[in-house]
Each structure stands twice: as structure tokens, then as C-alpha cells.
Length: 126
Image 1 (cartoon, rainbow, N blue to C red):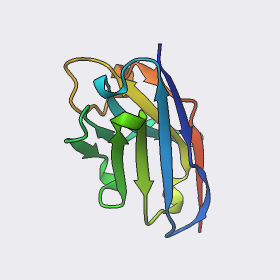
Image 2: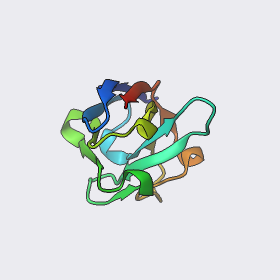
Image 3: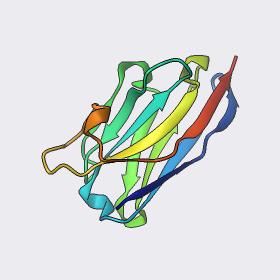
Image 4: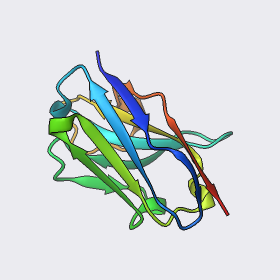
């Protein structure tokens, strides 16, 4: 079993920055590709960013490319999402997820992730 706990959300003005953290416990963290997703009220959960097991490969959704950076520290069992130049459209609950499939490098498909955190709210004011 794996537990994922997100933190770092909050209220920020447009143009500001936040750093989300995802602390993992349970199975070996370095065996999982990690992803960040977000969901705004009344919308479907959408992919934000993903990172491979060793951190060497990353993948971003177009709306966040160039503004968000995903990273991980396998020794600390933690994944991060650095969010810069935030926009009101980034307002959502943000979720981290772990994919333990041996075939995955980076994964944008929510249905293929094995474990999810409870989410952290990010609100960007204009």
C-alpha cells in the first residue's frame, strides 16, 4: 500500500508562485513514475505533469509548459511541482499520483495511476 500526502497549496495572486510537495510512504518511491493532476469544480481531472522513476524524463501539459516544473527526490520519498507565473485558470485542487507499472516512463493517463493523494487546493486571484 502507498500513501501520498500533498502539501503547499494556498491562495496566491496572479503572477505569483507556489511549490507543491507530495510525500510518499509504503512501497519503494523510486519504483514509481509520478504525476500531478488538477481538477477545478465542474470539470474533469486533467493532467499537469509527469516524471520518470529516476527523474530523467519529464512531460508537461501545454497550458503549464514553461511555467511549471516537476521534480523528485527519491531519497526523501517526495515529488514536487514548482508553479510560477500562476494564472487564475490554474485554480484547482492538485493531486499527485504514483504509477508502479514497469512499462511506464511518464504517463499522462489518470486511469493508469495506481495511487492518489487527497489533493491540495490552489487558488489564484486576479
